[in-house]
Length: 309
Image (cartoon, rainbow, N blue to C red; front, side):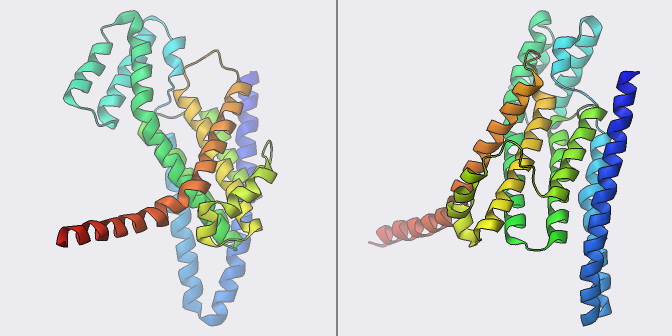
């Protein structure tokens, strides 16, 4: 009975936050639409069409895609016994074969795990985590960088809200697609509430070392490359960090098989992981976007010059 009440309140909270998000979005969109109407009515219509496409493609479609995925997590392998445990192991093997690029040898290895009886779950968890985690980390890294750039450069609340919402909802969908399954309904609702909160409040300041973020965001390579001021850079960094925390929590929901870890430990782990990734984004962004292409260009010319000699 208690769980039902909790789920009901979670749904009510999600709907309430969603309504606030929609109201804020509509209010800002109408304001911009009125300004565009002054230039030409077709600009206003085109703007509203663009907003509708972004909302449907970047928010509605990812949400539906997540809820269509099967509910599962690696933790279930440790909690299940007998036929239930075998069922989850078979599902995980099927997911690996369908969603991960494996060599013929690796495919045989995965199928062989089902014959190991007591060691099946441990072998599968280790293999799955090793193959899936790098793909998830890449998606999370790329999304956080996009959000940093969007919210640091953009000075318009509509663009910020749409960009962050679409990026975060799409990221949850990509995590679900890569893993082949999704968290429970309650966990998904919590993730969506976090996304709406991030979008509306433009960052969760809890437990964040803002004094450390400011010089990182403005003096870091990516911040200098974009030429952004302290306030915008810090806002972008905060938004990127909250996205990284949300993504880390989603990943832990699915891949964390250590049932001994408490929620507090997982929360601290997600924060530490998110902060380290953000540091890497701010420091290495220039290397990826500017320095390396220049090095490649001059390296090519140098090699070409030696060849002509």
